Length: 336
Image (cartoon, rainbow, N blue to C red; front, side):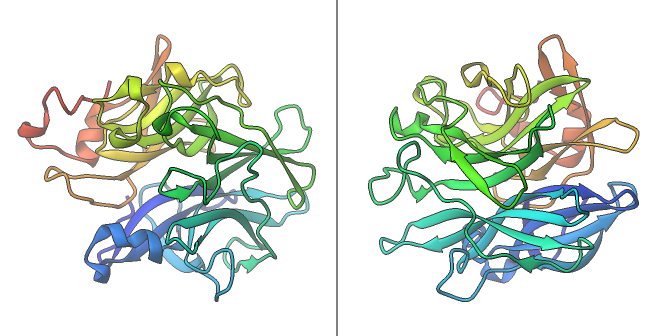
């Protein structure tokens, strides 16, 4: 696992250069004392590993830019892919403050020849379009949500797709979370499109850090949402990592049928396939037995299908994020 004694670590993503696995992660100093303050101080750290368990920290990938800039408050979650010309592209979230104190999120890009030294490209690449996505100042949400770019090649070879944490312009306030969508032919020029999902009572206020992936050849959409941000019809759950049935990597995604993959001990679930093709599940440690923020990226956990539902190995969850007996109760459901 990756746990830093002097910093909180939370959202993360991977790249594989064929020799080393690379872990990119958000971090902020524990000298802030209050973990809620970490969001406004986040930088993108970097570590490497041969076995997905032992990580060696290397130079940071990216920190916030000088103001005024779209990322002058913090750099948040993203993804890394390799361009056909060999360069690595890091898509990330840039956060800046609006005049009302809420943050505005847009999508930025940095590039690298070796995954170690990154160059920030002019940006932002994409911002929320009010035709389809909720924006400030009319937003009833606590921010202008447009973040967590997950970029992957089109399954048929027709360019690239980006999934984005965003919010629709209609629907219940706590059900407006949608999967935003953009397309590109070259990874540099992007066209924003309408969302791939719809808001609703069985939806979510935000579908954070989404990943369209496959486990044993079956597509699934992963995302995260805490209990206080779920739609009206889902009230009472603790939240955590969720899985939604998918007909393909590009959907349709059955958000109404989404089910919890973990409880709130873990957050931001990622599936990574190793070089032998085996799927591993990772998450960051969200809350501990005292229900306080913990941080740190887990060791790999096994993940499999049981019928039509994905299941994460509960023994691995307990080993990674232990709970005391008082937490095993009706109001904190176990991982299924």
